[in-house]
Image 1 (cartoon, rainbow, N blue to C red):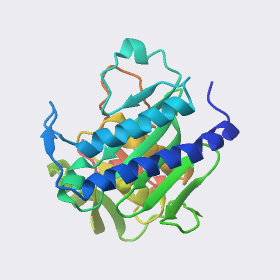
Image 2 (tube, rainbow, N blue to C red):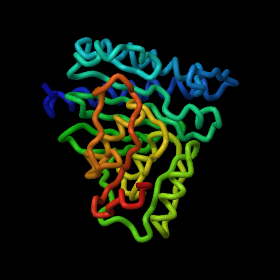
Image 3 (cartoon, helix red, strand yellow):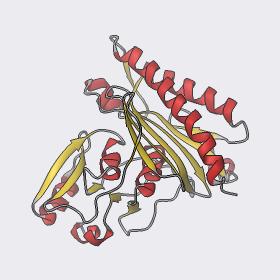
Length: 270
């Protein structure tokens, strides 16, 4: 049973506090000459990833012991077990580790609550730039910059002319290049981590097409924020992204957009 709007609201502030606490741990390590190691898939791992994971994991375990936790840094849980979960936390303690290593500030803490395969609460916090985005189903989407008052955010409708595209800073590829060629005149904002989807949520970008590998913890929190801001995060068939439906935790290619009138799939490879 999906948590009520009121229950989600009661979980939202503690999730934000945990994202902030994880962000503090990350920034402590960011200020040091940290070591980088390679995981089995060749992606980078730092002390900050694990420090943030431990902070969030312990906090969520205390907050909601009834909900399992799936984290990028503790993802070796069989689908046989995961398939029994109705509601669970899905976290990426440090999204954009490559950006962290490059020290460009474009990395985030992502915390999502999934219920019945859909994200119903999402927190995305970028500690280096002190930008916080959050939402829960039925409660709206918000952005808070540093200590200012949180403000409601909405996607841009109709989409801009020319279209503003959010693109990956570290994962651009030929398929994206072809998509942009077919799209025609556009402005491109290159960005790391879940911040690209958040640009769509706050109306600063119209479309974020992703044709490279991502995992479920990369998108879930941002999807909730985008949807509560009036937009969509869908597969390239324009079907809503769903979570924990299969053994693999890899996402299909996807679009994040505000205005469905853009017919965004027409520019993709057939």
